[in-house]
Image (tube, rainbow, N blue to C red):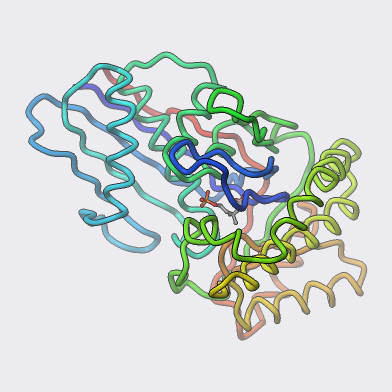
Length: 332
Ligand code: PMV
């Protein structure tokens, strides 16, 4: 029996990965920066055994029983297992059992935590010895690019790179560096109509995409500098512009891609309202309608209580910055 269990956090992007130059290698058109979310995670156990007849993928989505997956979701997981199995020279089939403690497919980066946990659990179970840089690269190859940033601790940068070996993730600041928090405002748990994969593929149909790419080197500099200075206002203003830039590109694609809904705009208005009352809080959205309210830990409960009363809110999660992926059980 070769088995291992890993836990990996979801992450929220301050500067977002949107569009790729190479599909097979998941090479991005720009560098990106995110923070890991300590309280939102995926836990995955992988077992390789000679008597297993076929690969099986079991997933327990948020609040649901574990189910045997079929179709594209299972295929993507098995393709990553196969890639790592080949690397290790192992032929045994695998059983993968995964659980999420937050809703999937709604723009809270469930594929990021899922592919980071899967890759680390496989690497450990198969006894592949890798540096953290190499582990991030192997994770990226799974196809969910943002998963690369769930490998290192804390606030993480995905260095764009120009080849598979130079496109990797590294920690910019560890999870204890800054008392930032994310109040995740869930305005819909309905699975999004266009996946982020479709979004990446459509970017060149937007007349605004080139302009977006031109702004990103400067944006990355500002975000790095805001992190260095622990300046929430500088970070917040930049991350709001960044979220609007991504969604402007998505909405101006042909055909248009809408990730945002009415609840998103109510939440944005209420974040402005909180700011007018001198509570420093800023919004960002990934590829989904849900709003991440980025603030300081000391304001987290106050902000949560404010939004709990709003009729358009379905769930609220709160999280500090978290560590990256880690192994919690290993047996070989
Ligand atoms: O990793 P993917 O293919 O699910 O794409 C992630 C896209 C965004 O969440 C919108 C941005 C990001 O950098 O996380």
